[in-house]
Length: 139
Image (cartoon, rainbow, N blue to C red; front, top):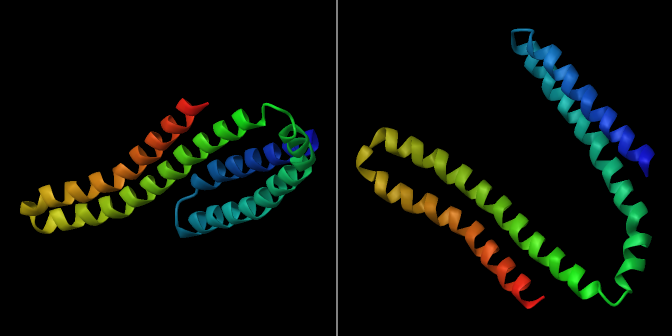
């Protein structure tokens, strides 16, 4: 397990170092090299993390048979509801916010309408937070 974590840490640090060195080079070739390095990093990092998770499944399954597994699953559900809701809200606000900025730059009168749409995207995170508070109150 520690070997996988060390290998992952080494890959991430080497990619960051490569990116810092390459970013000093001006031009399109430097940006292409950074993108290539990030693709290589992700193609190595994701399988290593998947392997680490698969190796921990027996430990998690053994822990789930204990009497306190209901509390652990409740905390997991609360964390997942908040985390996934905030990821969705971030994606929504990013898409709607950039479109709203473009629309407002063309017609400043529609600023109020665009703020409503951005607020609706942020509401997704609030719903996830409310669900996790409801889950935590039952534990």
